[in-house]
Image 1 (tube, rainbow, N blue to C red):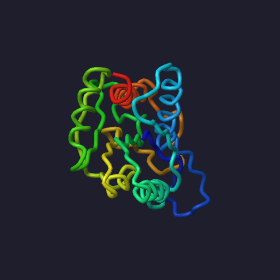
Image 2: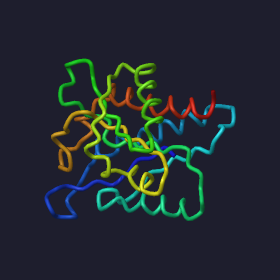
Image 3: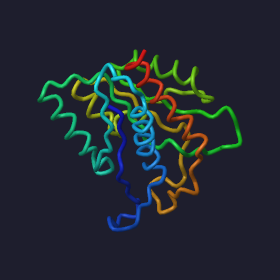
Image 4: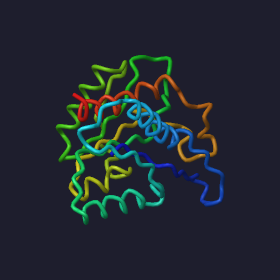
Length: 194
């Protein structure tokens, strides 16, 4: 599963406040769409079914991904991995390199974590950190909870526009986002076409 969430909120407390959500999380959804487009061009059939999913209601409590994961578990679905892209387009210091990303793993996904680190080093200009502080705050968590192996790819710095009306496209760094997307794409290729 290649997933991301498409909802956003603003901390103002008013649920009707416009929440543009360019980084959180249109950036992750754009990764899902772009990788789906690229995979679709490959003439060979993948080794595993690849599902591209944009989840709803992440901000309210991971409801969309929880619903999907619990139903997958009830049906005994075999899910090889779940790659979650959440906030992948903002750098606090874009002029300072190397640029970093955060790869968040779970106790059952250490092998996937190693694969992601290798993909990051082999296919991108990014360096990575492993800060698992927010391990239970994104769509990957319900998959872990039901025994599946997930990873989260996210930026390694704080976004000052997080959950505000200023989370706009103008704050996104497309070069950084492109490098982030390469990791999920490389992992899907390696699991399905090599």
